[in-house]
Length: 95
Image (cartoon, rainbow, N blue to C red; front, top):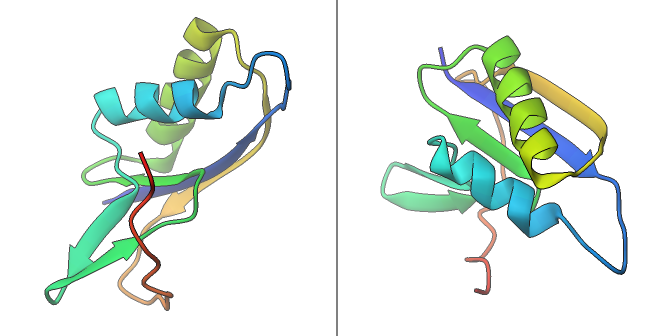
């Protein structure tokens, strides 16, 4: 099963943590886009997915990364990524 996780990191204008948490998750194999039928779909900014991962594992990975980054997760939702979905393609994230 594939997992999709979306989350909000508590905002601190003096020390924002969104990018640090997202990059930490990416080092664990999570991604912010996927390819389907030769089209790249970009997920919302704090939404990631990972193949062959259970939602509980995604949650635990997020909490572990947040702890290492000294970030607080305000809200989070993890679920199985099914084949029944709709999306707006989006555009690549600016680096």
